[in-house]
Length: 301
Image (cartoon, rainbow, N blue to C red; front, side):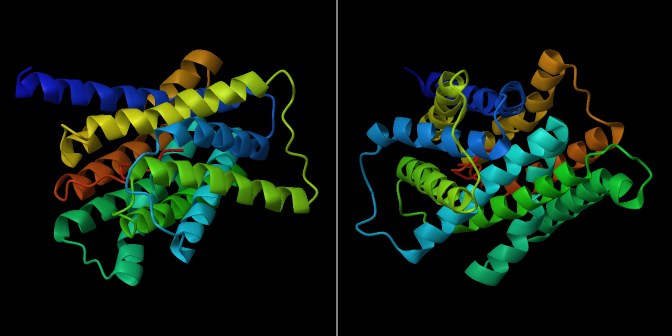
């Protein structure tokens, strides 16, 4: 098989991962369970599916960093699912992309990373996009009842940035192992906190199979596909292809539930996506879904 065919196969794997990641909005809105129940059980099933795929480069011992990243991952997932339940899917996914604006200062503070002008330009575009989405709610010019969901979306972006920083500090660890660890440990930590708070996270009988499929198809398999695609595709190309996720996410919800994003969301989200592209293409790094969108590892919600 020629090098072009191999590269094409890699791009298809990454595109398939992005398409599956993009199902988070419509899948969450279709489930009757509350956001925290969905977050916990989706991650449990995703981690269990990824577990047999863990083979090499697992750390010899767990460190405090691994637990901190798991906490950040659990926060990101819970906040993101909560945002989907309390605002439009477009608001939720685009505001999670606000991680671009937080990764640069966090990287400088914790890893000593310095951003070049291109990265700073991307961050600037992302910040303008964030303001474009948030301003109508804050200033009261658009009363949509989505303020709580927008707050959750913004904080999920901050948590996403923390996960990305943790993943960058864990580059020597296997990406599949990291995804498995973050899903299982994050689900256990989140479930424990919710249980201690007296919150019932037992799923309904009618949704248990859907939650299992959610964790398998929308979380676990995309990580495996993305990792396979990165064997033959550059990080820069992967970043570009994976942008299909935030674009498709609200489209599926519009098709399935008739939910249309607001004009401010479309404009602000577009600015943020351009910012992500500008900030990442030069370095060839993508915010890893969790790895994900192992955009860095994404990390995707």
